[in-house]
Image (cartoon, rainbow, N blue to C red; front, side, top):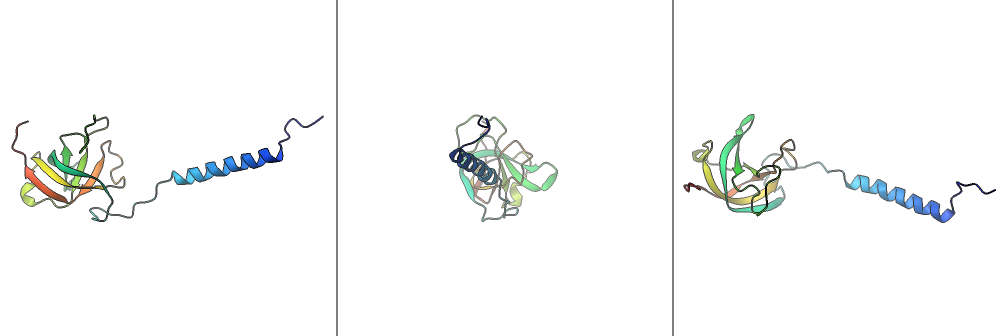
Length: 139
């Protein structure tokens, strides 16, 4: 009587290929560590903010870090908010604009934060803004 667990040689190779491909997939899902620190201008640009609207405030627990919380939800996209509004860590905010809850219109490249703020549900970006003005509209 033949062994019920006998596997043909071709099947063995097939199973070995599946096992090896799963091992390489596990390695490819690992995140590479971020090489950037803070407001590094070399961070990759994810998207651009063009005349986006937001409010200036400070990062909770870090009063020295100034941010803009988007009033539009997801900056440069017409999509609903599921997690929270986009947040921009401002790398070049003038002292004259450091006013909590100041409404602004801003433009600039939004840089990858490399999960520096991974505990947040919102997407966080770094930016050296190219334009920022006070928003005087009441809307």
